[in-house]
Image (cartoon, rainbow, N blue to C red; front, top):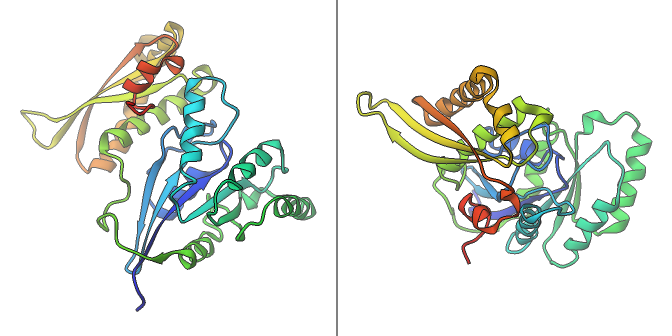
Length: 301
């Protein structure tokens, strides 16, 4: 058996191209939240893949897009930061969407670094016309010298094994950075908050936009029942009307959010959970630095 290999791999792409789905498919466990809405991943979530011969630390970046507010700028900076100090970049693009100006913008950022970039066409199962795909592939490959090109379906697990083999072939010999059983470098607080936020986005659909943040304020143990995890979390929104939607008539919506989130948190923690959810209005929080910092979206400096 050869030397142990390790490295950092950034997963990059415009919003909603399946970056999180790919990482979860590779890790076999839900780390990054998956939502049908774009721009759900706000932090550089790292998923960790470990086998007997290698360890790959995936950095799942926020989708790069034209920023419309302070939070958007922060998300773009986070994505661009991840290009530096990694061994490989995966540029995920939807196979059923044509090459566009957004791709030109992202590719212009690749030219600023020496890191090898894989072009990964995802959602290959949705392609109806192969000639359109070939035309698209040509536009991408003419615009940048990609190290390798892959065609996958992260949702169906098609060719993800070939992609993993390609990634591993680019890794250098290196140490095991994290314990083999660890799948993410994020604390439980963060993953639980993401689970709750995903349920809010899924259940409220178009009624509540991305002006939702979740902070897990406390994870404790019930005094009378040590097997029960006691979790208190606050859902922050920007307007009173959004708070009403999340609570729902007679508290129906918040109960459903709590119920679905609790089922998943139970699987994550491996124990019973009491989940106490609150909803608070924090006006225009996405443009207020102090609030962004408090909710974990800005460095303290």
